[in-house]
Amino acid sequence: MSLALAGVVKRYGERTALDGVDFEVGAGEVVALLGPNGAGKSTLVSIAAGLLKADAGSVSVRGRPGLAPQDIGIYPSLTVRENLWAFAELHGVSRRRAERLLAPFVLTELADRAAGTLSGGEQRRLHTALAVVHRPRLVLLDEPTAGADTQTRSAILRAVLELASDGAAVVYTTHYLPEVEELDAGVALLEAGRIIATGSVSELVAAHAESVVEITYTDGRTVRRAGTSLHGLGDDVVRAEVIRPSLEAAYLALTGRRSAE
Amino acid sequence: MIRNELRLLRHDPVPAAVLVGMPLVLMTLLSDAMRSTLASNGFAGAPGSAQTVPGMACVFASFGIAVVGFAIFREHGWRTWPRLRAAGLSGRRLLAGKLAVPGLLVAAQHVVLFGFGVLFLDLEVSGSWLAVVVIAALFALLVLVAGLAAAAALSTIQQVNAVTNLGAMALGGLGGGFVPVDSLPEWVQPVAPVSPVYWAMEGYQTAILEGGGVTDVLGPLAVLAAFTAAFAGIALWRFEADAPKRTWG
Image (cartoon, rainbow over the protein chains, first blue to last red):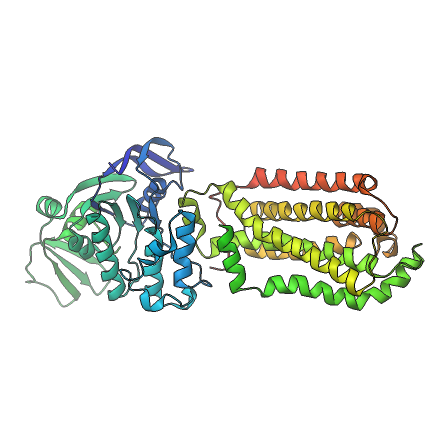
């Protein structure tokens, strides 16, 4: 296994962020770590990256992981190329090898621009590229497409698939479930510090998803009911959405919440 | 790490240039006035640069505390700190990397200021140049370690700005960096020794004006070493690699 966590517990004072988490990712696998805000996703990623120590349990990581934290972390005064060099040097990798990441992350035309002058999406692509400069065997991407434009999202998803096909294990946290379906990733669903479901997208959909109608009323109430029928909706309904069997529906069934909440 | 710090400096050299250029201007403006001040303190005939060169070197080297502090805090502001740590650099190696370029800056500052003093402001060292170099080297080390202590103990960039910059000015003035301590108000003179600059200036005065050698400045050197050890203790005690630092974000 490229990453293996067993019985991992992490507490912040009185609050338990991770409560006996078992989690494994093998070479060539992409595992999407899902869960509401505060479920413990970033804590798990930080522990896997070696930034935090678990209070209990064991953590086994193959090699030095590549980390793209949730917040964009780049040197704004340096050019794109120099940012890649900086992290290549830290990992003892040649500059030329680092520059090979320019093309897959659609950064070639921007190579000599100061990173601070890039758009948010361009910065996000550079931020993600910096995580994989040293071709890590384990890649940890914490919400890599948050706020990203379409080009950035597709570049990052393509890069994730390439990394996995090269044999890297990828842990990918996100709130955008269609991305998980596009990656055909394995899924681990984290809720209040515990993994409550694991499996492939199709397994989770088959086991947990059913069609649901989500109805929002004028007074702000939201009600969900099984099925696809929109009959019998009163005048006080402002919005009704049919959620077909999908990862989103499975997520809703398991957590009682939409993925974006 | 050091290569990247140099790269960052190359992209924004203005603060470093100011830290070397500004004291040159002040030395040039103040040296004539300091001649009479030194004369009234018993050093008749000594050039004013005997006060202004070491004084400005101490005051402006003290801004190195801020340089070190900002070098660490900006990594938090740019959100690159966790990435550096995830790259396998231990907290202490990270800090050591952060000291190298400020160390070079303070060394360059001293070379330029003393060189300028000798070439253009009639600075003469009546005693040992080696003593001057040893004092400068120890003071530079003190400044770097104090910068680490500030970065470790302070939690916001506003604190770093206020404590290090205002602290450098206050301790520089109190310690005799601008004018000799003997020329300060009488009520200030007894508290001057709380400033490391006071002890550096004591050593410089011994070497530059009184013909002293290394053995003659061992007292001030010991006090500077004690200050350095105290700052190192604070840095070791308070430094936590994952401590949150609030910057401009």
